[in-house]
Amino acid sequence: MSGDPLAGLDDQQRAAASLLRGPVCVLAGAGTGKTRVITHRIAHGVDTGAYSPGRVMAVTFTAKAAGEMRGRLRALGVEGVAARTFHATALAQLNFFWPQLAGDTAPTIIDKKVRVLGQAADSLGLHLDAATLRDVASRIEWRKVAMRTIEQDAAAHPAGLGGIDAGKLADLMRAYEKVKDDRRQLDFEDVLLACAGMLESEPRVAAAVHEQYRHLTVDEFQDVSPVQYRLLELWLGDRRDICVVGDASQTIYSFAGADPRYLLEFGSHYPDAQLVRLEHSYRSDPAILAVANALMRGRPGALALTSARRPGPAPVVTAYPDDSAEASGVAAAVAAQIASGISPDDIAILYRANAQSAPLLAALSARGIAATVLGGTRFFDLPEVRQAVMALRGASVAPVETTFLAAVRDVLRSLGLTDEAPPAGGALRDAWEARSAVLRLAEEAPEGTTLRGFTDELMARGRDQHEPALRTVTLATLHAAKGLEWDHVHLVGMSEGLLPISYATGFEQIDEERRLAYVGITRAGRTLSLSWSEHSGSRPRQRSRFLQEIGTDTVRAGDGRARPGARGRS
Image: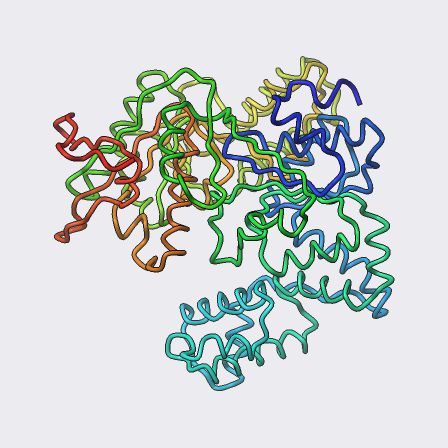
């Protein structure tokens, strides 16, 4: 390893990365460099000899986050760390130990839970539509991550679900489990439960895991569910070398079992835990952070984010007459930003629900603005990208008579990437953008890169879901935007019924919606625009209660003036 892993860290980051022995709790606000701290802390441990890479387990929640962690560790010269998701870690242990315990291969994993659930319903003579089956599947997932039995779930929900009474729902859950058992299958949640059960019931397996992994790091600890927390306890055993990193203000997955209390009460569970706060944001300017801090002020675990950036324009809320006018107005604002020289990939439009994307896409398309909706096909799974990687791989076999970059350009040109202006829109524009992104990766490659090395890197990035940004405007739900950032963010639909969503009624649900709004606000680096529409069809709307808390002026579309009395309480 070359260089000091602590070099370049600020005082807070250095303090966190220097604590090599747990228990350690790092409260990391949005944009404060938590992944940097995690990876540099591991690299520092390896550099000093405190850690052996093969003895480090680093777990997180998404394959993309795990891939980014592995990529950063590689860049720091650290190989061999087990950086995976909870499920990937548990599945790897099941696949390794199951044959030793049962003398057979581990069960397969079902990929379509609703289909198996439908077959279980048929066996009981229940005729349920797809929507009801999805609701039942969600209830099963919740029951398992909460570590409840079928009987406990029935007692907690005596009214059943939809048109299914509690007794029939319990019968359906049992039938579903029987179908899986008969087929030797596990579902996604079973993987965690089965791994926990194996560690609890097989002392030699637990001993082997504890011998292998001496140092445990957990990213996004605010999103841990009861079954994941139990797994962490079993992976840790009687050791205390655990480092958790999280931000209670970004807990937005309670519907999937996430419980921020594990983060908030970490100091109670480990009274000798060392606590470090990361509150210096490198993403957002002070005006944006002021809005974010105001929204979360006084909430459990809230951090007071600061910025060294020069203050930019204050976020402004715009009120539009209706949804169509809001979509058109936001598209016009985006067009003006692009005309001023801002790159489209530095702009995002965020919203609460997927259905809100359709009018926005239409309004952008009407202005000839290319957009990408997060949650679609992954970059390295796009046909144009797969074709480009295979073509580059093939070209790497033959002797190269030109420079590396010229060879990449030649291959992409043969696939249709020209030096002319991109197509106006549609599938041709999408293909052009995808191939252009591959070319940009080549242009950013280190000096001395070969075609073979470049394709190896592309394939590694594909496995790690380390995707480049397309030069298009991004549209995303607030959930999908978590972990991402843009210089310029438009947060739309800031009205009661959309944010907070209409079915959020209790205090805890409203607080979750508040955290969603916070996540959206803290995605922005330089400018933040918020908007809402005063009518949905003929029905009037009220602006979101969250706007009243952040103290931001509201401008009515068309007059450019702050509305009297629009400034809320701060």
